[in-house]
Image 1 (cartoon, rainbow, N blue to C red):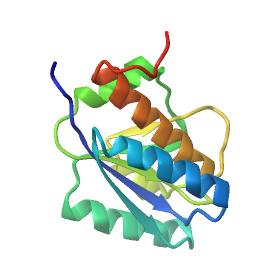
Image 2 (image 1 turned 60 degrees about the vertical axis):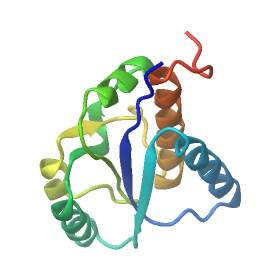
Image 3 (image 1 turned 45 degrees about the vertical axis):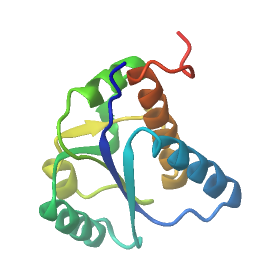
Image 4 (image 1 turned 180 degrees about the vertical axis):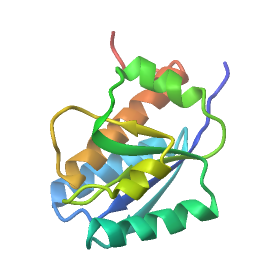
Length: 149
């Protein structure tokens, strides 16, 4: 059995303040680390332009493939998302904006805009949803039970 291991970095604006969400986010991050190497970088929330400069500075050091989460991005079903990740070599970055979203500079510098839904979520909920989908992708790619068709 071939094990697919990816290098994932989440760059997120803002801290997780809700205790329940902290717990669930940690749970999925721990699960993901069995299959993928996960790094999370939190940026203090300020204006989208200031946040954008910090994000772009991080990406300049080791860019890789960049998904910027945005409601106008491309939507995937879970299997297609897993396959998309498997086809990317090198580091895969996911950028989650703050309450005012991402700057146009960050969106332009991204390889792809990704939508978790056409609905808008708080950055905390978006992080939980993304981590769950990354865990699901790991299970799909490594043929382990979790995802049901």
